[in-house]
Length: 225
Image 1: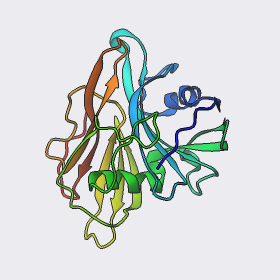
Image 2: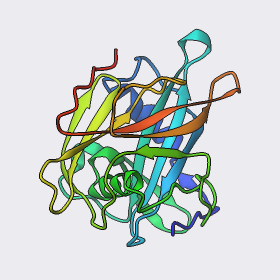
Image 3: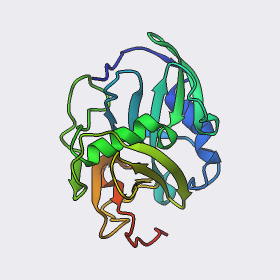
């Protein structure tokens, strides 16, 4: 169970994202001024890695966009993931934390797979031990008692594909994380499963859309424009 500490972060996650977002190909460009708009957490069974899927809005009016940034929080560097480091911060209780783009973190990959297979449940973003019942998971992905192994990460326009393999599986499974969120849109018709959740738009209204989809190895999925 993830414990949410009421404390300070220096710099804050949003300050780190303001520097990191403009370096991403799927960001609309220019200076970023992200604002927290929603999201949820996943628990690491080992209790070592914090996992958060944060939605942030950036921009104003018709030019505003909402991005999904999965983040993992670690007590030390993740070997081989230097390019996925969003930044480091000082946590008022836990000390220095290394914050990574979660799509490159094997713990995130395993727990996203667990969410699709029904082995874990989305947790509230800002509360300890509180399931987030607004997050919906529809799936035809087979239930599994095993963790999935991260195979590769592929960046696309508006999404990141996290390919995983479960022990004993004959083919890998691609978990597509939407980077640019669209209200009510289905970025992958015919997908094997999807995670939908809510976020707040720049005008203060709440909407809902797809955060992630599961794609079978042979699925023919159009690339979102």
